[in-house]
Image (cartoon, rainbow, N blue to C red; front, side, top):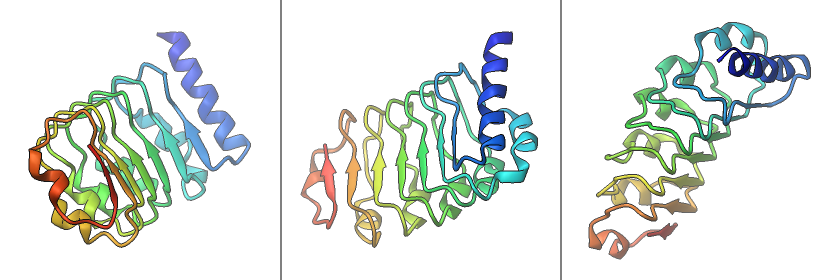
Length: 167
């Protein structure tokens, strides 16, 4: 456990010291986004455009996460145990890509449809049975929605849309 904490601290320090625009905390055995990270990275949260929290055991993310990293363009949350996203995800007005594949979502996070900059959404391998096709089709920048390996209703693919739907 101490080694895992040291690994997270090293990665955060490298992001801060090198003024990187990305934070990679993938494969760190995290069960939540550590509160201490907010303090450590406070000086450069406006620079962070890409965060990977892939392949952890994260059950939930707080609104504080989304309200802190307001300049996010890419968010990789694949391979966790998320069942929902907070409403604050809809405030990420620079987000271009979000990967929520291999989680435990039963309902599509509809607040994502409020992010007009989103081009790519992956919800592959969840338990989602319905997509808000009408709202998705109104998203101006949306190019792809990957919903493969979900128990989607058969009529999902028949809805007319301007983006590529992978089912």
